Length: 290
Image (cartoon, rainbow, N blue to C red; front, side, top):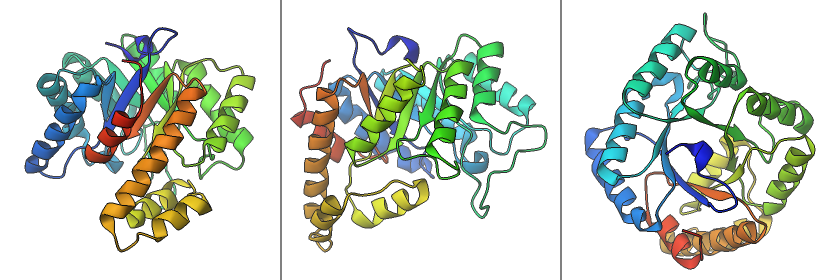
């Protein structure tokens, strides 16, 4: 099934994002986690693409493996990092030949050790160029792109960032999945500006449940997201209690998701970090449309 068909007045899109494990042995617990989450009938599972293409072969292989083993719709991430247009074109053809129907099109983060993204020689500089390439040459793919409620770190202003997103949507994106955030007010303000800019493509909030304070602080520092002071204080109180941190994180995510659902979001996208427990507990507590 295609992402373009997963959201609408009579459809709610629930999706999960995973990354290729570094070893083949790591696929076993990942597939086990996805099998455990199948009871919630996810609309699709997306598989990330490593910086500088470090997992680009694994992305396609694992995307197909998840579709086969778990019986769910899948999406493969693709970035502009470290590739020429011809290499991207060949990768997209391979994905098509493997029966993959959905692509999450991203510019991609700078490779490790580089402070800024540099356009590869013969490659693409922006995600909207990647969307346009896919739409023009591989029109059968459905495409999701990324949005940033708290503004992309490299954007000089929220207005410029929103204009960049509109270029991606106008190029042919079928859905926008947001970066993680912990204050719903940021998402609601972003959604208002998104709508005022004339975009009607489904806007899907991205949720990363906090299960480890140190880990999420590293992640938020890299993507420019912030943790509200009151939530941070709750987590700090359990810094030496891993189980307590998970409980606090799950309770917070449940409240966050309920508020988003009450506000009529067309779907939820969970960043799993390849584990099922926290997301499963959250979904158990929510009365989601199936």
